[in-house]
Length: 108
Image 1 (cartoon, helix red, strand yellow):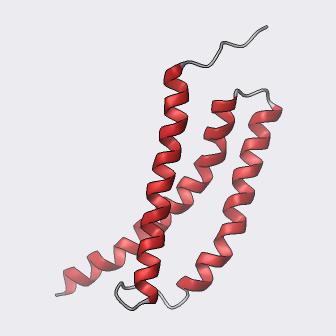
Image 2 (cartoon, one colour; image 1 turned 90 degrees about the vertical axis):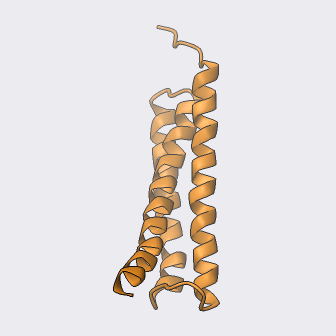
């Protein structure tokens, strides 16, 4: 049985997923850089965390992409499977890093 071809909307959805990942990642990078400069509240273990989380996140992404490809997924589905774990990790980092600011503001 032949698969349905990918639609322009599905391609757009995959590319917009990459855009979301880029936004999340850049936000985290900015907050961590400001934290290193002492301008943003970050935990003492943040530098170690940023190094140790990357191999795990990329392993999850490659496993998800390989699983989707092995099951016969279309290119847009493979891309979506690959970026989902990376986006989850970056989003969790952004929420954690911005949570420190909200907590500090509530105390004032």
